Image (tube, rainbow, N blue to C red; front, side, top):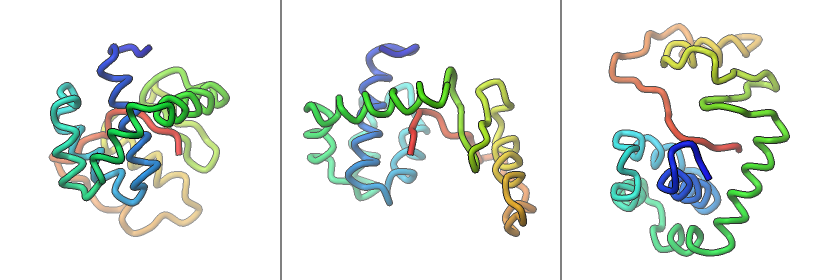
Amino acid sequence: QSLHGQNEVDENIRQLCVLSKSKDKFFTYLECVNKDYRNAGTVWEKCATDAGVDVAAVKACASSDEGKKLLSENVKKANEKGVGGSPTIEINGASYPASGARSSDAFKNAICGAFNTAPAECGKALTASTTAVQGGCVA
């Protein structure tokens, strides 16, 4: 079950299947789905195709025990880490909790602050069109 119902569970499973089958295309897929995340069930196939993800492989995974196992493993990892909200990210072993700011700049600052020597990109301003990622994954 999920806070936002079965549609969110279904998309979580699809995301885990995409991550499992096409890890290098995961964030491209996620960025597309997040543009219309409330309708993930109707946009996911186009997003997968546009990202170069094998739609048939994701469907097979999501509708089988494989998808359920991936979700179960994901929930287990989240529980072990004490994740209780979204977004929660971990950077170099330090948790960035759900109670933290959810803006793009807040995420960037948290990530950049975890470096001993931050990369040059950390000094760049984010554009207004930059949005925080919705959804969940433990990788």
